[in-house]
Length: 255
Image (cartoon, rainbow, N blue to C red; front, side):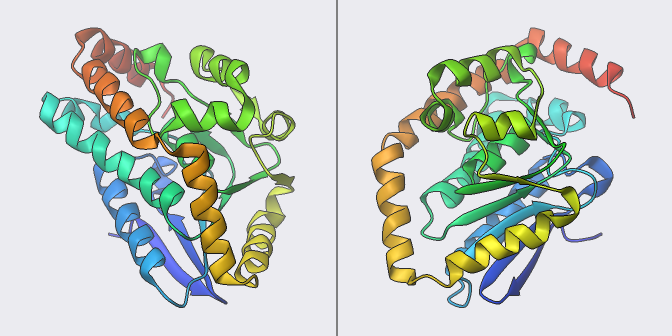
């Protein structure tokens, strides 16, 4: 079995690649654990100055793998453990001392969009599609998104994106301030590496202090927000109506 997150170091850049292309890099427990380990290693690696996160295959990340929902929602304790592990990814990306550049293409859905937004700078391939489908299933996003997204694009736009789950494309995401840049798909990784290289070339003590200051000033109550998210989504996981909606979506979803 291939590693679920591929890691390489290139000129001071830790490149992490989500590697479940056969499932459009959908999130399951094993992928969460692999990403936690990869992020922790990249943050601890003295030779890596910046982290670049991308996805293998046709999509960045298609969100939670709903085939795993019955197992994830088996008990409240199981759901809470999974969700807290998921929140650890946000802690590492947002509160870690190294800048994270996201190279996002294809689809970024649900938890995958959370990870893209958790990046400090998001580059989108033209034609990329993004959405939050959680409310339709009786849930809400995690990843600190209920705080981070309004801070980035404003409360009204954040409410619309989360509440209605509408699909937006890269240009719209750029226009609302969600993304840093859009680039032709064939140039995405090269442009993301160039961006990461610019960050790697800066004095690293200044970059670390800047990220720490920005994160703490913008997201100081993030732990409280993520605890609220975990409580809300754990209750949703335990709701039979949520399970029914998820099951219905799984039946309708094209294979």
